Image (cartoon, rainbow, N blue to C red; front, side):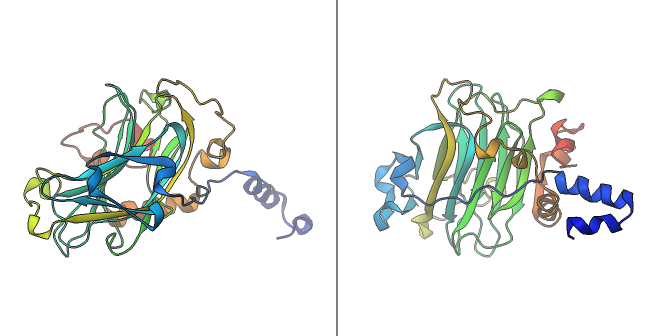
Length: 298
Protein backbone atom coordinates (compact mmCIF):
# COMPACT_ATOMS: atom_id res chain seq x y z
CA UNK A 1 0.00 0.00 0.00
CA UNK A 2 1.36 3.43 -0.95
CA UNK A 3 1.33 6.10 1.73
CA UNK A 4 -0.65 8.51 -0.44
CA UNK A 5 -3.48 5.95 -0.62
CA UNK A 6 -3.93 6.03 3.16
CA UNK A 7 -6.08 9.13 2.88
CA UNK A 8 -8.89 6.93 1.57
CA UNK A 9 -8.89 4.71 4.68
CA UNK A 10 -10.80 5.25 7.94
CA UNK A 11 -8.77 7.06 10.60
CA UNK A 12 -8.52 4.03 12.91
CA UNK A 13 -7.13 1.83 10.13
CA UNK A 14 -4.63 4.52 9.11
CA UNK A 15 -3.46 4.81 12.71
CA UNK A 16 -3.01 1.04 12.97
CA UNK A 17 -1.01 0.98 9.74
CA UNK A 18 1.31 3.74 10.94
CA UNK A 19 1.95 2.02 14.27
CA UNK A 20 2.77 -1.26 12.54
CA UNK A 21 5.10 0.54 10.16
CA UNK A 22 7.12 2.08 12.96
CA UNK A 23 7.43 -0.92 15.32
CA UNK A 24 10.90 -2.49 15.17
CA UNK A 25 10.89 -6.24 14.61
CA UNK A 26 13.48 -8.91 15.19
CA UNK A 27 15.62 -10.04 12.30
CA UNK A 28 17.98 -12.99 11.83
CA UNK A 29 21.63 -12.48 12.86
CA UNK A 30 24.08 -11.29 10.25
CA UNK A 31 25.27 -13.98 7.88
CA UNK A 32 28.25 -15.83 9.32
CA UNK A 33 31.62 -15.55 7.58
CA UNK A 34 33.61 -18.74 7.01
CA UNK A 35 37.26 -18.52 8.07
CA UNK A 36 40.04 -21.09 8.61
CA UNK A 37 40.21 -22.88 11.96
CA UNK A 38 43.45 -21.16 13.00
CA UNK A 39 41.96 -17.67 12.69
CA UNK A 40 39.90 -18.01 15.86
CA UNK A 41 40.70 -21.38 17.47
CA UNK A 42 43.46 -23.70 18.64
CA UNK A 43 43.48 -27.36 19.84
CA UNK A 44 43.49 -27.97 23.59
CA UNK A 45 43.99 -31.73 24.07
CA UNK A 46 44.84 -34.91 22.15
CA UNK A 47 46.34 -32.92 19.29
CA UNK A 48 46.86 -36.07 17.21
CA UNK A 49 43.08 -36.65 17.19
CA UNK A 50 42.40 -33.44 15.26
CA UNK A 51 42.73 -33.68 11.48
CA UNK A 52 43.06 -30.59 9.26
CA UNK A 53 41.73 -30.54 5.70
CA UNK A 54 41.72 -27.98 2.88
CA UNK A 55 44.24 -25.70 4.50
CA UNK A 56 42.42 -25.69 7.83
CA UNK A 57 39.06 -24.66 6.43
CA UNK A 58 37.72 -28.03 7.60
CA UNK A 59 38.61 -29.92 10.78
CA UNK A 60 37.76 -33.45 11.92
CA UNK A 61 37.63 -34.40 15.60
CA UNK A 62 38.34 -38.09 16.19
CA UNK A 63 37.19 -40.22 19.13
CA UNK A 64 38.55 -43.71 19.78
CA UNK A 65 38.64 -45.95 22.84
CA UNK A 66 41.69 -44.09 24.14
CA UNK A 67 40.61 -40.46 23.94
CA UNK A 68 38.47 -37.80 22.38
CA UNK A 69 39.69 -34.30 21.57
CA UNK A 70 38.73 -30.64 21.59
CA UNK A 71 39.56 -27.02 20.84
CA UNK A 72 38.84 -23.54 22.14
CA UNK A 73 38.79 -19.95 20.98
CA UNK A 74 41.88 -17.76 21.19
CA UNK A 75 39.85 -14.87 22.60
CA UNK A 76 37.29 -14.30 25.34
CA UNK A 77 34.08 -12.54 24.42
CA UNK A 78 31.40 -10.50 26.13
CA UNK A 79 28.36 -10.67 23.80
CA UNK A 80 28.22 -11.35 20.08
CA UNK A 81 27.30 -13.93 17.46
CA UNK A 82 29.09 -17.28 17.35
CA UNK A 83 28.46 -19.92 14.71
CA UNK A 84 29.80 -23.31 13.70
CA UNK A 85 28.98 -25.64 10.81
CA UNK A 86 29.09 -29.21 12.10
CA UNK A 87 28.45 -32.64 10.60
CA UNK A 88 27.84 -35.09 13.43
CA UNK A 89 29.18 -38.59 13.96
CA UNK A 90 27.44 -40.90 11.49
CA UNK A 91 25.92 -44.32 12.05
CA UNK A 92 25.86 -45.88 15.52
CA UNK A 93 26.91 -42.87 17.62
CA UNK A 94 25.43 -44.02 20.96
CA UNK A 95 27.46 -42.88 23.94
CA UNK A 96 29.21 -40.06 22.12
CA UNK A 97 28.72 -36.34 22.77
CA UNK A 98 29.66 -33.53 20.40
CA UNK A 99 29.69 -30.25 22.31
CA UNK A 100 29.78 -26.61 21.16
CA UNK A 101 29.52 -24.08 23.97
CA UNK A 102 30.63 -20.84 25.58
CA UNK A 103 31.92 -20.72 29.15
CA UNK A 104 33.59 -18.30 31.54
CA UNK A 105 36.51 -19.40 33.69
CA UNK A 106 35.65 -19.30 37.39
CA UNK A 107 33.75 -21.20 40.07
CA UNK A 108 30.53 -19.19 39.55
CA UNK A 109 30.78 -19.52 35.81
CA UNK A 110 28.32 -18.65 33.07
CA UNK A 111 27.83 -21.11 30.22
CA UNK A 112 25.76 -21.46 27.03
CA UNK A 113 25.60 -25.05 25.74
CA UNK A 114 24.85 -27.05 22.63
CA UNK A 115 25.34 -30.79 23.30
CA UNK A 116 24.57 -33.36 20.62
CA UNK A 117 23.84 -36.76 22.13
CA UNK A 118 24.53 -39.72 19.87
CA UNK A 119 22.14 -42.62 19.38
CA UNK A 120 21.80 -46.05 17.89
CA UNK A 121 21.62 -46.32 14.10
CA UNK A 122 18.19 -45.30 12.89
CA UNK A 123 17.31 -43.34 16.02
CA UNK A 124 17.38 -39.52 15.98
CA UNK A 125 20.12 -37.42 17.47
CA UNK A 126 19.13 -35.46 20.56
CA UNK A 127 20.18 -31.84 20.89
CA UNK A 128 20.42 -30.70 24.50
CA UNK A 129 20.79 -27.01 25.36
CA UNK A 130 21.49 -25.48 28.74
CA UNK A 131 22.26 -22.09 30.29
CA UNK A 132 24.37 -21.64 33.41
CA UNK A 133 24.36 -18.37 35.34
CA UNK A 134 26.48 -17.81 38.43
CA UNK A 135 27.53 -21.47 38.40
CA UNK A 136 23.96 -22.80 38.37
CA UNK A 137 22.48 -24.64 35.39
CA UNK A 138 19.61 -27.16 35.60
CA UNK A 139 17.93 -25.50 32.62
CA UNK A 140 18.10 -28.43 30.22
CA UNK A 141 15.96 -28.59 27.13
CA UNK A 142 16.09 -31.42 24.60
CA UNK A 143 14.82 -31.61 21.05
CA UNK A 144 14.97 -34.02 18.15
CA UNK A 145 16.25 -32.33 15.01
CA UNK A 146 14.07 -32.28 11.87
CA UNK A 147 16.94 -33.64 9.76
CA UNK A 148 19.79 -36.12 10.09
CA UNK A 149 22.72 -33.98 11.33
CA UNK A 150 25.25 -36.63 10.26
CA UNK A 151 24.36 -36.43 6.56
CA UNK A 152 25.57 -32.90 5.89
CA UNK A 153 26.83 -29.73 7.53
CA UNK A 154 24.33 -27.60 9.42
CA UNK A 155 24.76 -24.27 11.20
CA UNK A 156 24.51 -24.00 14.99
CA UNK A 157 24.82 -20.53 16.44
CA UNK A 158 24.34 -18.37 19.52
CA UNK A 159 23.27 -14.73 19.56
CA UNK A 160 24.09 -13.19 22.95
CA UNK A 161 23.45 -9.60 23.96
CA UNK A 162 22.24 -7.71 27.03
CA UNK A 163 18.63 -8.58 26.25
CA UNK A 164 18.58 -12.23 25.32
CA UNK A 165 20.42 -15.40 24.37
CA UNK A 166 19.05 -17.12 21.27
CA UNK A 167 20.02 -20.61 20.09
CA UNK A 168 19.70 -21.09 16.33
CA UNK A 169 19.79 -24.18 14.11
CA UNK A 170 20.10 -23.14 10.46
CA UNK A 171 18.65 -19.72 11.42
CA UNK A 172 15.63 -21.35 13.11
CA UNK A 173 15.40 -20.17 16.73
CA UNK A 174 15.08 -23.25 18.92
CA UNK A 175 15.41 -21.56 22.30
CA UNK A 176 15.37 -18.11 23.89
CA UNK A 177 16.70 -17.15 27.33
CA UNK A 178 15.67 -13.58 28.10
CA UNK A 179 17.37 -11.22 30.51
CA UNK A 180 15.12 -11.60 33.55
CA UNK A 181 17.27 -9.89 36.16
CA UNK A 182 14.29 -7.72 37.08
CA UNK A 183 12.47 -10.81 38.40
CA UNK A 184 15.50 -12.21 40.23
CA UNK A 185 17.04 -14.46 37.57
CA UNK A 186 20.76 -14.08 36.92
CA UNK A 187 21.81 -13.36 33.35
CA UNK A 188 25.31 -13.63 31.81
CA UNK A 189 26.46 -10.03 31.36
CA UNK A 190 29.81 -9.43 33.07
CA UNK A 191 31.91 -12.58 32.61
CA UNK A 192 33.66 -12.91 29.24
CA UNK A 193 33.42 -16.41 27.80
CA UNK A 194 35.64 -18.53 25.62
CA UNK A 195 34.18 -20.81 22.95
CA UNK A 196 34.81 -24.54 23.17
CA UNK A 197 34.05 -27.65 21.17
CA UNK A 198 34.83 -31.29 21.80
CA UNK A 199 34.01 -34.88 20.90
CA UNK A 200 34.11 -37.30 23.82
CA UNK A 201 32.76 -40.51 25.29
CA UNK A 202 29.91 -40.04 27.77
CA UNK A 203 28.22 -43.43 27.69
CA UNK A 204 27.57 -43.24 31.43
CA UNK A 205 24.70 -40.77 30.72
CA UNK A 206 24.44 -39.57 27.10
CA UNK A 207 22.19 -42.20 25.48
CA UNK A 208 19.06 -43.35 27.30
CA UNK A 209 20.55 -42.27 30.59
CA UNK A 210 23.58 -44.50 30.15
CA UNK A 211 21.73 -47.68 29.16
CA UNK A 212 23.21 -47.62 25.66
CA UNK A 213 26.98 -47.95 25.69
CA UNK A 214 29.51 -46.86 23.09
CA UNK A 215 30.21 -49.64 20.60
CA UNK A 216 33.96 -49.35 20.08
CA UNK A 217 33.80 -51.72 17.12
CA UNK A 218 32.55 -48.68 15.19
CA UNK A 219 35.50 -46.48 16.24
CA UNK A 220 36.98 -44.14 15.24
CA UNK A 221 34.05 -41.74 15.49
CA UNK A 222 34.41 -38.49 13.55
CA UNK A 223 32.68 -35.10 13.88
CA UNK A 224 33.44 -32.61 11.09
CA UNK A 225 33.64 -28.82 11.42
CA UNK A 226 33.93 -25.77 9.23
CA UNK A 227 32.91 -22.11 9.31
CA UNK A 228 34.53 -21.12 12.65
CA UNK A 229 32.65 -17.80 12.69
CA UNK A 230 33.24 -15.44 15.63
CA UNK A 231 31.80 -11.93 15.76
CA UNK A 232 32.01 -10.79 19.36
CA UNK A 233 33.25 -8.11 21.69
CA UNK A 234 36.68 -9.44 22.61
CA UNK A 235 37.67 -8.71 26.19
CA UNK A 236 40.16 -9.84 28.79
CA UNK A 237 39.00 -12.64 31.04
CA UNK A 238 38.63 -10.16 33.92
CA UNK A 239 36.68 -7.51 32.00
CA UNK A 240 33.29 -6.54 33.42
CA UNK A 241 31.88 -4.73 30.42
CA UNK A 242 32.26 -4.47 26.67
CA UNK A 243 33.96 -1.23 25.60
CA UNK A 244 31.74 -1.03 22.52
CA UNK A 245 28.52 -1.83 24.43
CA UNK A 246 25.51 -0.46 22.56
CA UNK A 247 27.45 0.19 19.35
CA UNK A 248 27.62 -3.26 17.75
CA UNK A 249 24.98 -4.66 15.42
CA UNK A 250 23.74 -7.23 17.97
CA UNK A 251 22.98 -4.43 20.48
CA UNK A 252 20.49 -2.72 18.19
CA UNK A 253 16.74 -2.70 18.73
CA UNK A 254 15.92 -5.30 16.09
CA UNK A 255 17.98 -7.90 18.00
CA UNK A 256 16.43 -7.25 21.42
CA UNK A 257 13.58 -9.69 20.77
CA UNK A 258 12.34 -12.16 18.19
CA UNK A 259 9.74 -11.03 15.70
CA UNK A 260 6.36 -12.70 15.14
CA UNK A 261 7.66 -15.04 12.45
CA UNK A 262 10.61 -16.13 14.59
CA UNK A 263 8.31 -16.82 17.52
CA UNK A 264 6.11 -18.82 15.17
CA UNK A 265 9.08 -20.96 14.17
CA UNK A 266 10.10 -21.35 17.81
CA UNK A 267 6.57 -22.53 18.61
CA UNK A 268 6.85 -25.04 15.75
CA UNK A 269 10.00 -26.48 17.32
CA UNK A 270 8.35 -26.54 20.74
CA UNK A 271 5.27 -28.36 19.46
CA UNK A 272 6.82 -30.89 17.11
CA UNK A 273 10.35 -31.61 18.29
CA UNK A 274 10.75 -30.84 21.99
CA UNK A 275 11.12 -34.01 24.07
CA UNK A 276 12.14 -32.43 27.39
CA UNK A 277 11.82 -28.96 28.87
CA UNK A 278 12.82 -28.19 32.45
CA UNK A 279 10.07 -25.58 32.56
CA UNK A 280 7.38 -28.26 32.35
CA UNK A 281 9.06 -30.80 34.65
CA UNK A 282 6.88 -30.67 37.75
CA UNK A 283 8.90 -33.38 39.51
CA UNK A 284 12.05 -31.27 39.52
CA UNK A 285 10.25 -27.93 39.62
CA UNK A 286 6.78 -28.07 41.27
CA UNK A 287 6.68 -24.30 40.71
CA UNK A 288 8.01 -23.29 37.26
CA UNK A 289 11.20 -21.21 37.40
CA UNK A 290 10.35 -17.51 37.01
CA UNK A 291 12.08 -17.09 33.62
CA UNK A 292 9.95 -19.77 31.93
CA UNK A 293 6.92 -17.62 31.21
CA UNK A 294 8.99 -14.74 29.85
CA UNK A 295 10.89 -17.18 27.62
CA UNK A 296 7.52 -18.51 26.38
CA UNK A 297 8.35 -22.01 27.57
CA UNK A 298 5.00 -22.38 29.37
